[in-house]
Length: 274
Ligand SMILES: [Cu+2]
Image: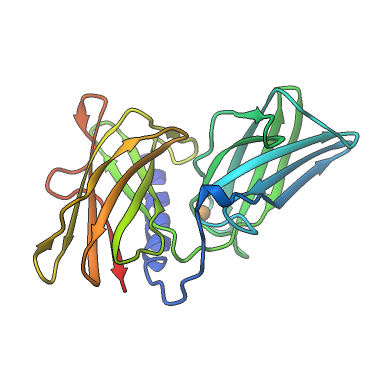
């Protein structure tokens, strides 16, 4: 079990390292006032169809995806209840499997006509790594094991840290800024806990302390605010990149009466500010 966990973390780490080289940035806006949902995946079985719609792009991408599910039975759309969704990735040859963070349940949002929430996609699919979706409506209707695509958002960032004493891993996913600008930026992250990298729990009661600095000039900016929980899994603060160059934003996290980030070496995101 432990060996398997380590191999999955290594696998993810090697992918996440690659993802640090952003030589071809692409635009992934996250302005909630401009939510336009596009259909990004379909899973059908008999007279049943589940659709995933995304407000984060025209396909599911690595990182944070704001999504809604639509369910049709005999072409009649469901307008109440809930959807459950699980995603599992199989790595051919590596003989392992991992999950990705999803919500325990997606509730119906009448204003949007969908079962809304988020999914975090840890890795892109490719020829040897395949995502399978398992869909459930009201614990009554199921479509299982349908392959779906996930693209690679080169701007997506994750940090994984491990509490070995507790056998728990944590995943910190950056939501904003994916494209940092000079001056004030919204700093948004989402935090998950996992003991096996198959199921993940979204943590909503952590306390976060951000720190923003520029290594090369030993420069700290002022006017930053710590990320605080604002709902839907998201912790939101502000970071001030008051000069161009390479910035680091670290996040020390206190949860369940202890520090879960390594003391003196908290996870840090690197930003290149034009
Ligand atoms: Cu994978």
